[in-house]
Image (cartoon, rainbow, N blue to C red; front, top):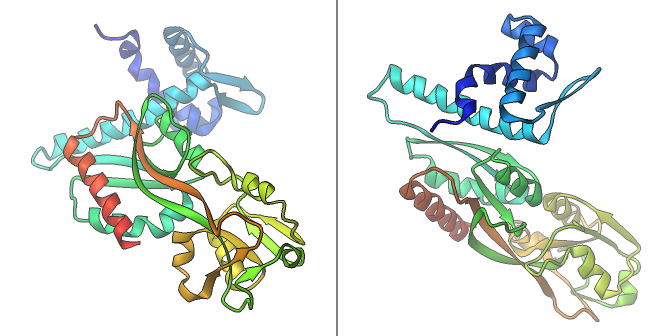
Length: 302
């Protein structure tokens, strides 16, 4: 039996355009329909789904949580209709699978070029990529804004399937110009430390917690949200930087590992990289196998 919403799909276009525009009047100019007509269509939709889709104010119209779910559906639905339309015009054309992939910035820089090199000759695959912090990427995956996620750790939920791609560790790095390989607690009091405080390891500990447990006191602490910025500043000898080993490896001899006396280990905070997707993702097993194979092959190239 078809859901009630299937009888009102013509109204989804009105909803979608209002969500994009943020106001009835802006959407009406694009659609060539009056604001009352569009407003009535949306109210009918809200009645069908028994939920408010927009918060209405003088500033415009903002999506509610239910509205966000419907908006995510519309984006995918209209893209699939576009693909179907193209296929019907040229039925001999091979169908294209479109995948939206979210990934952490550092993974995009070092990992994706190799993975894309493997996938570039797959004619039936079209990819779009967005970058963000790992938790934000996982939230987008749960909300169906993206299809696949490649992240560092991130929360696990029942609807997600995760495949571990590889592991890494953190280490304190200095410029190759830095004269010490080992430092005392007293020496670090004259130095600057650069790190991402909310980067997590596989035990759920953040780098802020790791730093707190060392009881070290630095002259300055820079909280930065990019490993690449940390690596560049460290390379230029602005201070010490906490980096994943695979990120630091891209700088070769320009960076070196530093041991701070009194800390338990030179390398710490093991963290894992996962390829994740929802358990209801509708793609072929062969395509999923290709994505996993390309991910593992990319790891070998890093």
